[in-house]
Image 1 (cartoon, helix red, strand yellow):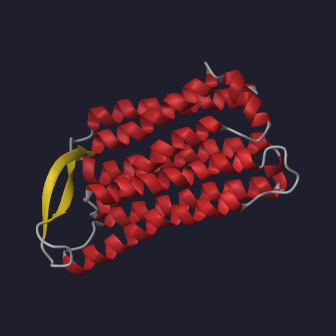
Image 2 (cartoon, helix red, strand yellow):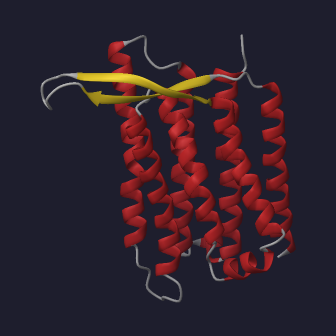
Length: 247
């Protein structure tokens, strides 16, 4: 699969180059992570809040880009044989392990930009999104060697994957009702990444429906790679233009 290897090498270099450029040109902007706690009996309305620490947006962006660069480099070099053997069987465990962290960092960043600051909420968003991604791994494993597709992991993954986006919409509503609202670029990020995230699910659905070119697992893998390149690049530079470019 030399063409697939070249695509992975390209993706690794492209992501790594973006990390380097971003760390040079981006301003070190931070967002707060807060904790809420009871100061009286439950239900009494006695709650407090404190800032626990601040997260650098530029470093979060560099993190998910760097994870993608590492993943594509590894499957193009050290794990090439393992990777290509699995692709021939319609599987790629490395993809799901990387996505479970990188895509979850991405959704947490989107949530923070929309105004979610509570550490418990952010951990929950990260965890449920990682679970959604790992249902993709479960889908591949559950259907290995089957002639009739078991759609249950796909359905459960879609249910889990909807939760972070619903939470962000609720935060949009709360921010719009109680302040000047969320910056316009965050709405752009939300729409762009929501559509791209759903394209990953569509790619899996087409793969297991074996529609058209998706009968070939190699084609489906290339679509996953291009979707990853597009989604991560779009988020990185939308965040840069909206929050990291400086004044």
